[in-house]
Image 1 (spheres, rainbow, N blue to C red):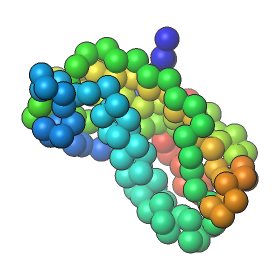
Image 2: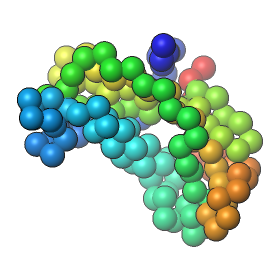
Image 3: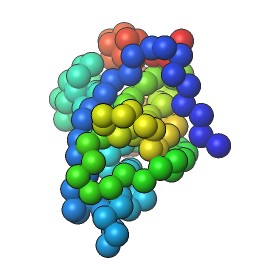
Length: 146
């Protein structure tokens, strides 16, 4: 079971809407569509706390890749729903981050999806795991679960 504890800490939140392309024939978000929402929220979170992913690659020579993912689909999102997709840092290791993510429907804040995502920091050229730069680690502390 996926657990994404809140701990009262504010999460980074990215707002989006469900478009026709995100849904199946019944107007419900197809299960793989949530992965795109989660990825986009992580991308916008990195941009908000540090810099865009291309700038991160150029400046530090690193990229983050998904190593593990567990997801629970609690309720469906439907065509035209407005969503908040959140990101919180759980555990930070030398070369990886555990992230708790949720997809919530706006305006009632009902949780639709819960996910735990482990991202690994890798060298952008070799894709060999490497340490997260200290400067970047310091920037992400504000989104840590306590």
